[in-house]
Image (cartoon, rainbow, N blue to C red):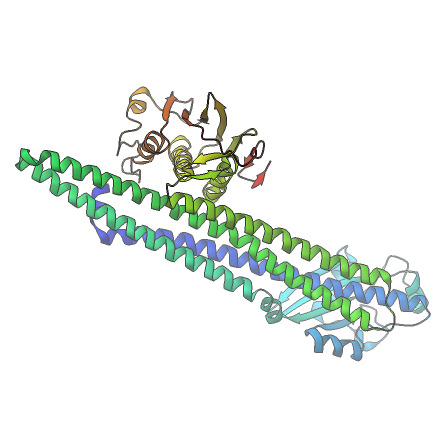
Length: 501
C-alpha cells in the first residue's frame, strides 16, 4: 500500500489536501483571534471615552457646573476625530431628547437588573453602553426625580462604525495571510520534492531488484547503488523534518507578531487621547497618568512579544543552518536542546506530553551541532509517533546531559508504550517500522544510529520493555571550546506553557 501510494502521483493530491486543510484551519483560527482582538480594542476605546466623560463630568459638577456628554460640540469633535457617536439616555429623562430608543431601553433595564456595561455589534455599528450611577454630585439636578445614591439614572452610549473597528487589524490579517501562504508554499514544495525523489528511487530499486535476479555478476554494483539510494532517502527524510520545523516556527511567530501590532496600535490611540487632554485648558494629573499608563502597558506588551518573536527567529536560524550542514561549530548544548524543543513545539503543544531538559552548567562544545539537532529531532518524533501514539497518550520525555571521562553522555528517556525484544533488536535497521501502512518510513532510528556513529563518532545503546518506555544513552567525544565559558545552568521547557525554567 505504501509503495503504491509512492508510485501513484495522483494519490499525492489527497496528502496535499490534508496539509492545505490544516493550513486553512490555522489561518481561519488566527483570523478569528485577530477579529476578537479588534472587538476588545474597540471596547477598550469606548470604555476609555466613557471614563473620560465621567471624569470630566465629576470635575465640572464639583465646580458648580453641568456637563452634557452628548452635547453637539463634543459629539461633533469625536465624530470628526474618530467617528465616535455619543448619546445620553434615561428611562426618566429630564430632556425629552434623551428618551431611549428600543435598544437603549432594553439595555437600561439590564442596568437596573445589575449589569453595568453592554457591548454589542449591531450590523455595521459597534455599540458600547455603560450605566450612570447616581452619586452625590448628581443629586443637585436629579433629586426631584426620586433618585437615591447608587440608583441607575441612565446610561451613555458610545457607538462607532464596525468598519473602523476592523481597519485596526488589517495589517495583522495581511501578515496572517502572508505567513500561512508562505508556509503552504514551502510545505508543498518540500513535500512534492520529497515524494518525487522517493518515487524515483523506489522505482529505481524495483528495477535493480529485477536486474539482480537476472544477472548475479552485477550484484556488487547494484548493492553500491542501493546504498547511494538509501543515503538520498536519508537526506529526503532530513528535509521533511526541516519542513515540519518551518511550519511550526511560522505558526508560533505569527502570534507574538500579531499581538505586538495590536499593542502598538493601541499605544498610538492612547497617545492620541493623551495629546487631546493636553490641548484642553484644564486637565488633571490622574487623566494624564491614566493615559501614560495605557501607553506604557501597550508598549511593554509590544516589546515583550517582539522580543519573543526575535528569539524564535534566532532559534530557527540556528537550527535551520545546523540541519542544512554537518560542519562543526561552537555551540551551547543547553541552548541547542531548547531550540529543538521550540522547533517541535507546534507538534507537542496540543498533547499532554511534557518535554523536560536536565542540563547542568557545562562548557561550550565544538562539533557538528546539526547532526545532534537531527538526532534529538528524530528521537522526539519517534516517541511522539510510536511511544505516545501521535500524541494520544500522556507522558514525559526527559533529556539529561553530562560529561564523563571526556565524553558527552546524553540520557534520553520516554515513559511511553515501549517495545518487545524482537522490535528492539531491529530498531536501527533501515525501513523497519511498527507503523507499516500508517505513514511510518522506518528511517528515523536508522538515521539516528548513523549520525551518532559516523558523524558524532560515538555510540548508541537503547533499552525498552513493553509498557515501560524507551531509554537511549548516547556517548560521543567532548570537544570543549577553549575560548568561551560555561553554558547556562539547567533548562526545563514546559511545552504547554512555552516557558523556559
